[in-house]
Amino acid sequence: MAGYLTTHVLDTARGKPAAGLSISLYRVSGNSHRKIAEAVTNGDGRTDAPILGQDGFKPGTYELVFFAGDWLRREGLVSGDVLFLDQVPIRFGLDEDNHYHVPLLISPFGYSTYRGS
Picture 1 (cartoon, rainbow, N blue to C red):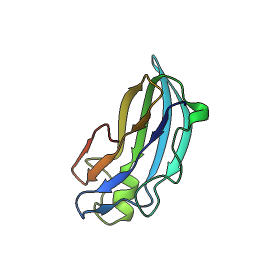
Picture 2: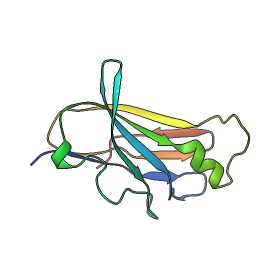
Picture 3: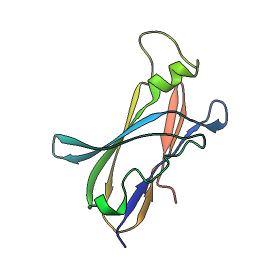
Picture 4: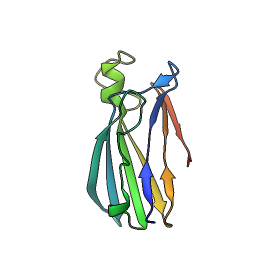
């Protein structure tokens, strides 16, 4: 079985899923980034399908970019032209045929991530 990648986003400021947040996935090679997927979180803060499915899985370096600033503005959690957090990139490596889960916990002034299950 080939590996795959899932993600989800939780709004830690309000203790709920971050629905409607846009995400892009890039394959990284040196200084080159190639976008391979885009998704928007659903009502549970997850993407409807793996953001990287088994058919596209390859070991290597990847980067998820969460468009947090757009979402924080729409939710009324921040305002202004300059935000403390805007696009949140998370770079990581996939090296085995496993399920990788990379969640984002977000608030207007901080975030965290981890390898989930």
